[in-house]
Every structure is written in C-alpha cells, then in structure tokens.
Length: 211
Image (tube, rainbow, N blue to C red):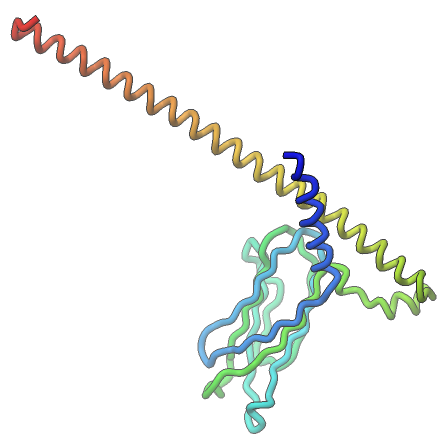
C-alpha cells in the first residue's frame, strides 16, 4: 500500500505528458466497413481533431468519407458525411472512452484510402503562439506559463485518478461483501440440507425398526 501514491503520481505524469502532445494517426480505410479510434478522456477536457483524406495513390479519383464521434454514453458529438477534410471540437462532459468512427460513403470504392487524423487533447489544443502575442510574453516567461498549465493538468489528473481508485475500491469491497454473504448462505443451505437428511434417515430407520 505504501507504493500506491508513487504509482498514482507516475500515472498522472504519464497522462499529463499525453495531454502535452498531439497524437497523429494514420488510418487505412477499407472500401467497406468502419475504422474507429477511441481515447479514454476525463471530464471537462477540450478535444480538437483535424482529419483529411490522402490522395497520393489515387490522383484521378476523390472518394469521400463519413465520420461520427460519440461520447461514452452514446451521444453524438459530431457527425458529417461526403467530406474529404474536416475538423471537430468538443469539451467532454463525462469521463470514459470517446469514439471516432470513419467509413467511405462515396460510390468510388474500388480500393481503400488513407486518412490522416491529428487528435489533440487538453493543453495540446492551446495555441501558444496566439497566447504569447496576446499576453505579450516570450522566452522563459512563456515556458513558465506552459509549465504552470502542465502542473495544473497533473493536479487534475491526480484528482481524477484518486476518484477512479476510490470507485474501484468501492466496487471491490461490494463484490467481496457479496461473495462473503453468498458463501455464508451456501454454507447455511448445506448445513440445513444435512440436518434434513439426518432427520429423514432417522425417521426411516425408526420405521424399519433398525434403531
């Protein structure tokens, strides 16, 4: 148990580093079927993504795609069709896995296409150049501002991890309690059945005058 704070800190640092960078993903979309990308994100986090089809291998045709982004509860956050490039942005309302699915929706489906997805989460969505110009900061001051935002992100991630840990602990305790009560109930049933069997055998032997 003494190592749990250190483990939580390492996990929070990993989450913070993930928030500091943008994740570029290349997807090969098949002629039929759907390709999806999921990301586990906590609540109140800004998400920004740009997507575009790549046509290097198909100079004469320009197929289009459809996209649907859903929340952990299945709510549609973004939906678009007949697109070659696009962008979606939202602020998460609940923690969980957010899903972005892509598929080809044009008639030109002889072969698949490649999709470039630039997925940014949290402080990676900030335009630091615009912030620096607006607040007239640069150099060390700008780096300190970035560090301040990163520390705040780590703090929020720690709170999120503690909440998840408490939730998992509660579920585990409830499960253990249910297992214990089930074991007691099973043992009680076995004892009751054994007593009934002994009582029945005693009556049977008494009738047969064996005892």
